[in-house]
Image (tube, rainbow over the protein chains, first blue to last red):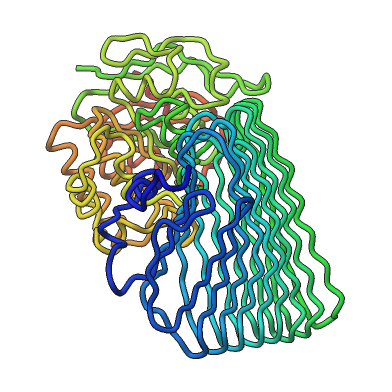
Length: 311
Length: 246
């Protein structure tokens, strides 16, 4: 199965231009099923992979003080209709380093596909790590996506992650991220998912603001249309003095969709402060009527509003 | 020639009479004002003409370009050429000014968006890729809404309290746009309780307590409105001695 597909196949499935990422100053790692089909590294970035029948293990180290200017391009996917991809990532981002990763996850033909990711990420002192994961799925909905990650932020580290699934059917997605924040570290997590038909969306994002002056924002933007069902648990705890956090859930429900959003905030230090806001419901009537007054049908106006919210 | 004709329009909201037997003709290519104190029913009348949610318990008829639009949906009325600008425009998280301004267009031609923004006095470079959200002031959103209307290029535009929440220079810009629209033959209906806005109109309809109590050229309405309606001395009970219906 693995030898039949190239980086170009994966790029095409993910909707990215292969020539744009196939450059000497851009690090990349392309994995189809459990096989590396393309890779290129830049100085300071070390990636070891171990291909196994039941999964692929990736050990990534960004050397102390290395700052990678251009985003590292990763592409994970499975082009066949059936299969199971299990990716195990151990990332060690050493002190004073910087890296941005863009992960394109493509499952264009999925009928019975599982994409499992287990990640452990450690971000060193004064280091910053951003991870943008963009999924492109087919329209059959036969996919199960289960990304789990434990992240540790050292003093003054920055961690930002965005999960985007806007094209194609979600199928079943079950995100579970937990981040532990040391002194003065900064955490940002955002999920943007467009659910339709009988898609099932589960998001559990947890941030522990343990260090003094640590900060965190958890944001979710989910649309549930047709008979889609979404459960979103966003939890921030603050035990560090002067820790500041915010949980922001804004979800749209249309047709027979169902969304449960549970922002959980827990403060056990009187000098810490966390806020939350949650808004669930149909699209705003004034927004809708304004666009209809420009001639858009109700469905087209709703699409445009949701597109904006999830952008 | 009347582009919009309202015949004996009455509206109830929660059983309460809000509009009573309103009959007006809006002339093609002219600037009109529907004027009156707060609570007179001006915005309600415009909302009913546009077919907005909550304004459907009506009797009477609304004709646009000789078509009966009384039961039509908002988008169908818009497709015929009517649109509406809100007193306080909506905010849209994440929706770009570009997408909003071109929402009426099937072909997304950025040149149209740039042109519309320039006309309302906004620099396209600065605004095109911003979101129409809370980061914009009320005045900026008002200008962007007007730009979206200009891109749509409708036959009839109703603007609800166009001077609300904007500064003097923005208002001057808005008046310039209104004049330009009139020059190109667009019909304008201004919903207002402001003398400055009323002075932009050629024809005016004075509303009080859900009724049209006077219709005339704006010059004739201005003195009455100025003397009798600011402030309103009779708590929505029209002064019968000066009612000039017809």
